[in-house]
Image (cartoon, rainbow, N blue to C red; front, side, top):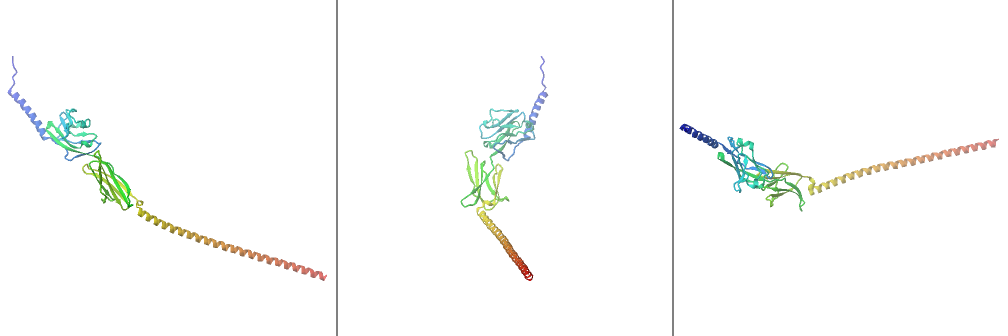
Length: 319
């Protein structure tokens, strides 16, 4: 029976090809770098967050193993994926169904991981491992909680105008500042801080106001790069002393106006009364004149009558 003969050259060619392929793959793996940001990634509790990492130059890792772990956690595997299949057995229970890779981007070397519904406990260091290219890199996640501050009007025993700014449920512990309408920092009272059983902070700070103006309470946390502000306008009637002085001036002015009005009314009444008196006097004079004329007319009639009688008597005597 004839046995096939393997030429030495064939064996050399096969081994050479295998070594070449291995060297090429190794060379590509050595040249590719896993790039992740050095600055912490910030997320707010309840939101989703992406931990970005990618290979440069891009290498297709869609059929490879991609592992995300969190050192110090047991079990430490946050996301374990091989050939597009997620392996749940080794995954930490607190991240179950809360992590995912961008499947359509794996062929482009994008191995970023998304965490859904971030918790305060998710804050910490994460590491991405790519065994196929012998690369790993770490990334830091910071998680915060914020709320909008509330301003309240407070009146103390000194009858001063005092504003209180309070912000509840912050993490990490924030700072609180008071500013005027131009954005200048104002001198205010000490910051009062209370940490609750849920590790969240409630802070408050008071400001004594001396004039009517617009004021701003600013609460900020530099580690998570979060700032919240609330504005408050203080009207003039918030100041008891100035309000009382204002009412005094109003009373004086009103009294002066009433005095002028009453004086004018009296003058009008005097002029009206004088006209009435003059009218009455004219009417009396007119009545007197009428009486004199009537008396004179009656006298004339009596004189005429007397003359007629005398004339008649004289005629009778002559005849």
